[in-house]
Length: 498
Image (cartoon, rainbow, N blue to C red; front, top):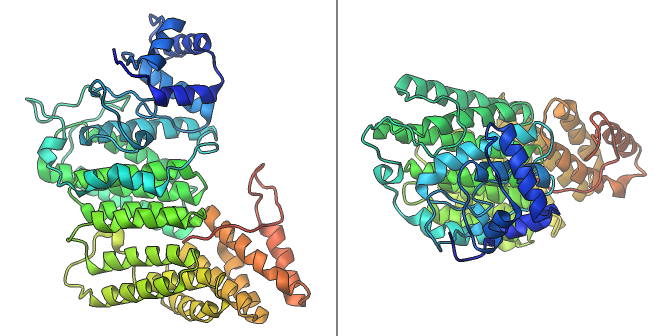
């Protein structure tokens, strides 16, 4: 029994529109459907959960999480409801469930992926949830991220080193694994990553989430330290991919949760640069959504949390994300300084230390692509920046190799947009059509967001014959932002991202 009101549960309960008696009846009905017909919850017990912070026994937290997830149209975890199996009386967790103790990471990962698979199948998750702000995330995670995790202390310890954590949730029948199985998992990450870079996140997102769910079950076992670290690395990589793919198809709150899970997993595996890169993804998401100030908060945490072991190329990548956020705020001088630092860091990387797998896509082409995006974004505030955007976009296109179709589309759209801003509709039309050639072959919603932004720029040249044709082609090709599959709509303005 606690002695404080459970404000998290109270807030979410208020959003549902349920009465306490109605919630009690729903809990009993859902528990029976899940194989627990003996459960008998009443109105007074629901009142105690909210008013006094009483924590119900299993399986009630799991039942409540499922009910709130379906009712609110987003994934709601047990932590979001203010419950924690290992919580101590009176201890409050910050940031509305976005931070948790190290020993809870595998359980949170397994629970969240399981709910994502269950409810996103029906198109329910991500529609009405809110993103945590960058400052909230930074405050919640700063001290935690800057500590040095001890793997042996983080994971549950039992007499049998391969015994599973009995408190983990609803995982499949996991078993301890060896180096060959981990190699197969690492290879699967590369396959998923290549697919995402080529075709976007929509078609493989559920496969990645399912694989991550299985890895969460594996992490409930205590493996030898070298295998446990590699398994945490797989979890971090899959969580970043799940987040990036979710962002790619517009499931923004779900994406943010995966980025936070990835940072936790990377930190538990002792890979602080990986944790920083995961947080930089959350920052890129914030810029795309028009919240560059939140992105800058996250980039401070990403850069400081990466530690001294981050390679120059990794630090260069972080600088380009920060520069894009600065460009979104019209801070041209700061953006140019930050991009200059990125160039110096990239050039200083001698290549004597192979980059980690998650950094291999950040090559010279991507460096120019991010430069092009930053200058093109700044051009909304300072049209003179469009010239530099064109130079870098053309260099990025020249350097792109096969398998990076989505990035190539972004490059062409940056280039076309910069040409429109520079009053060169003839060249803009040419490059826009290059993007249209392949944009329909991806499942990336972000490419359509960029196309909408470019379409907005065509308005000044609507009297030009070629641009008139281009506008009609875009209008015919553009999927409706919301609505039934296969419907079309005239595009409107939107954010940008790569």
